[in-house]
Image (cartoon, rainbow, N blue to C red; front, side):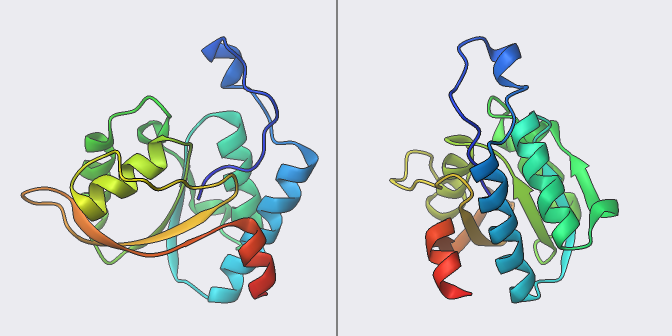
Length: 160
């Protein structure tokens, strides 16, 4: 899941990390969390980037899904993080665990591209508040999996 709308991007990375969700962003994330709840996915953990806008997104989702105790901050989801560290952490959970990752673009679409095509740069964009489901098949010799679906907030609203 990509974080919700957070206003104008700031040029100074330290200040940008503290950028919060807008009112519209909070509303969109709440709608996405309601949609997720309707799917009755058996999530084990909600892992969020520690940047404020992503953490707020994760908190809203965790509250709606009654999973506040399963919300974790993962540095591996920061926009500048190395995806190989994320894959190592996910591999310890196993390929069949349902996990909600909350992060940023272009990190998330790059990660999805690596998983489904073996390379970053796949022409795929996860919109703000968007949700993708990826099934992991394995981590060795390289991470692999398949994209099950990719949804925008607008589409999720129409589906509920």
